[in-house]
Image 1: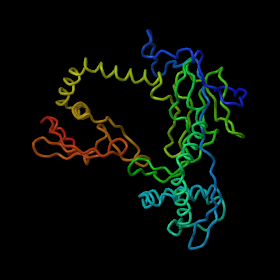
Image 2: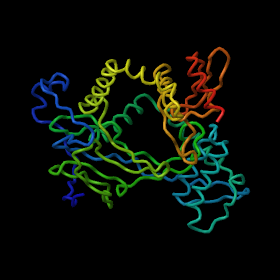
Image 3: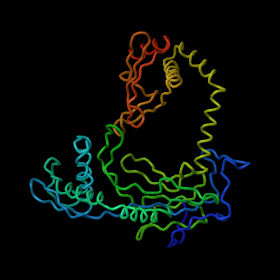
Length: 375
């Protein structure tokens, strides 16, 4: 951590030296490319404009009805109620888990003052939904010129955040926008769907930047949570998302040299596999006969990854995350043993995408699966 430097009032102009004199050589065309591994120094100088926050909430002033009576809300209460009201056409609006988590989040805000709201079923969000339909119709009726003008304004506001200077190179930033508040949806039947993702403020944000670079100016009346100079990471800003409790990072775009080099190293690692795959296959075939249960399970998992290209998977906390699995976290309800060494797979994989497939496996693998599923 470093002490905050004197904050500049203007955005930094992201333009590299001699930018107009012929441009840069592509990183993969350089004669000597130096690759930095995870944990090693990734940059010498780094300059950027921080993150772009969503606009503040603009209250519409429309109350809901509770037991047929108008209930006027504060702007914060209204914002969260509106998030729910506009989903009336979606399945989320009728999903019991989503409704329960929304109401729990909303009640935490309502409970800051005396209020009559005790049941979501007695709340009528129709007035807000009808307002939403009118606003949607206004947007749809905009002329092409109006849409173009609004886009130009939005692009101009975002332009300072789209680029950074990384070791003297002008690089594109990927996700420079701070996530707006909203109701968490997740993938599939996520146990936390409907929970409020809170509005982030500069105090929630950690900025990573070069020691000699001007510190980006936070919105008026705020300060950054921290300003650090960590040369061993590739993120520009970071915050913790309150629902999943995971860190979110602002990174460079896939077209950047840093991301390109990372992808190149992954592909090179994959290319090296061809020199070892025969030994790996011999090893797991040998382990099919192991008397150690874990060794035999590992051999079958490796076989599935090799032959069916299943994702590896890892253990999860089912109370906080969707019940998605991979090869190493399959349970016996995810497979069905059919005649003639046929195995049927049926489970939710990454992003809750259903994997359904039948495959003929080796007799020894089939026998091991019979043994595993009897336990």
